[in-house]
Length: 144
Image (cartoon, one colour):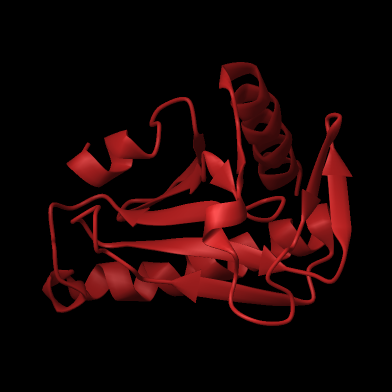
């Protein structure tokens, strides 16, 4: 796995695998259900991904939106390709909603709503919380 995937806690954060992409739980949750869609390749530029990765991305995005809509009833969803610190191709997937969502005893307020996400105000998960949220999302993913 590439450096960026490891940085986001793989394998503990793994939600789902595709041939070209991984869906990971984002360890810092600005909103409940925040994910990372990470390319499995070592590409450091979006244009360097193979054509098959772009085709498969449509499937991954459809799955992400279906699962997150069921999990958190988001009102909008943001895909952020920041790549300033973590060099390999990846997107931060931030479900957006007005107010607060709760799960596993934790509350997640979208503090940026309705403006850009407040990434600096994220809930940092410990190992147990990560396992609980990742397990919940995996179950929703696989349950459909």
